[in-house]
Length: 134
Image (tube, rainbow, N blue to C red; front, side, top):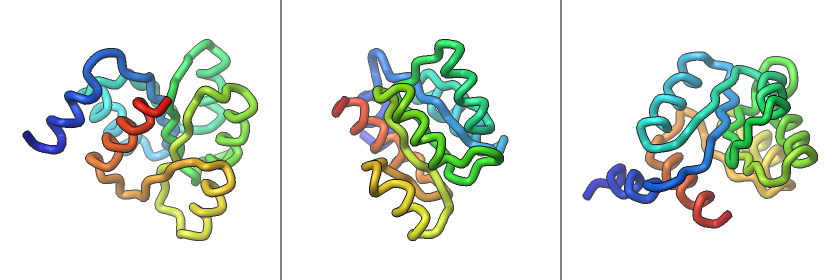
């Protein structure tokens, strides 16, 4: 059995909804498609402001994949807002930012991160871990 098949088995059954907050349209669509084919329900938006609107309209993601470098409100600010609005949403940073920025944005909040370009196997593994820990 390949690693991908193992991950697909792990997400059988009810999977948490994943909110994707990524300003690069191609990356956003690719993530939504790949996660959808792996059994996850997704909502994908291009900015932190759009993410807040989706949440205000009643979306209830369990995981939010958040790019740090967003137009307007930054990913780090969105993570802080999520912590105040809905502590049940688990943020995961996805970024090509340098190590200092990643550490500053994630360490204090205990947020996991993945570097761009994303390794999809690593993403599925992290989502599986988060799913089973929470």
